[in-house]
Amino acid sequence: MTKAQVDYSRRSPTYWNHLYETGYRLREPEAFERQMFRNYATVKAGMLAVDVGTGRGHMAAHMAKWGLMVLAYDFSTVAIADARASHQSCSDQLTFAEHDFTTDAIPPELIPGTIDIISCRHSFEFLDRARFLTDARRWLTSSGVLQITTHRAKRMPPGAAHQGLRDEDIEQMRRGWRYMTTYGLNGDDTVIGIVLRGPR
Image (cartoon, rainbow, N blue to C red):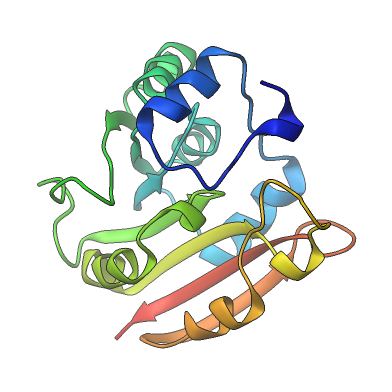
């Protein structure tokens, strides 16, 4: 399966397992993306973070190296196995687990009011958004942050596999949060960061 043939709207773990088994790679976060994340999420050592749709665990590993305690989840058994094997040096700060946030019961370790940062790097599009946003607001501390990295739909070429989020979808996400910020991650704002802070 070539990159052009990937249908990112598919949500089956079996589908994503096949994709990872056949060499799928999400581009690792570059230095600029990582620095913007740290700045906007106000990252501090000792924080508790959750990485949703972690894939091969690259962003989760960076958060662990910044001194955060990280719980990283993905519903692909292949991705989780690879993440565990690839990031053993972070094992004291980082835990990987298989989980489907759309169909599974909430993990018991996600205790309401205890999470400082939730990260969704190119994964929010594939969740049950209304349910997840409700859950995220409950898990986060009063000043906690939900950080989403995504494509902007209006900047994507016709027929592109990954359509991202529409501007109206992004604007609706403002509800239920004290603050919302967006920032560009490339020259044409095809990829953006969304920071939702202070659940209410």
